[in-house]
Length: 300
Ligand SMILES: [Zn+2]
Image (cartoon, rainbow, N blue to C red; front, side):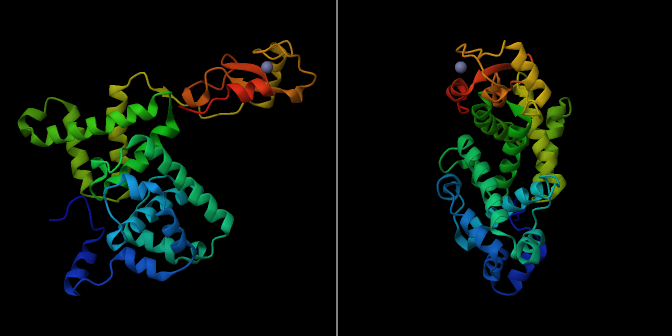
């Protein structure tokens, strides 16, 4: 029985059955060579693969996942949606197409950094050998979910809330699967969960991934209605900076040091941007460079 599109394409399954276990897709891709092929192997060195997911690199399953993560990030860099088909033929294209085979080192490096950054974020949400990541099909779904949450929402506790939410959502799904269909009709919560299960079968299809992430987002926001939208604009404009400078009386609002010129002043978010503070004059303060460095705490 095929669960959760553990195999991307049914043809591949039959191909393998008829040919007595030839190379699988990831193994074939790994044999193709080229820069992207090397990058996939490098990405798969990240400790996320060794420590967090359950899946081993047997038959290059890590390379398969690493290629999917790279495809997501490459899509974003190309200006398309992070949601895209993560099926076999698109992974093959990532390794085979000249555009990627001959990619410049700077571009390859930026791509690797984007995936590493996201894997680090996943490290804050999952535990070691997390059972939530036991089955194929899940790592890419959660990768996209965490990305979606992080790019749209803010708050000091966002990651700990996501960490708590994921097993709760898994529990909701399990409960819904056990429930008599007649008892479900009253609550539209179950309509979403039923659709979610149906979409799990479509594995790495673009629309299926996007819809499932949206359902997860809906359930998350219902549990956490206080979640703050992230201000899409992080930097103050030149005009805003000037207004903040004048409003401060041309001195640091923390230590009182007088600014000698505009270049010494820094516009800071009073409530950190990553914690949901808006890029607004109301949430702005004028700081000297040393106060800004001291107060610019990394996100917890
Ligand atoms: Zn100061």
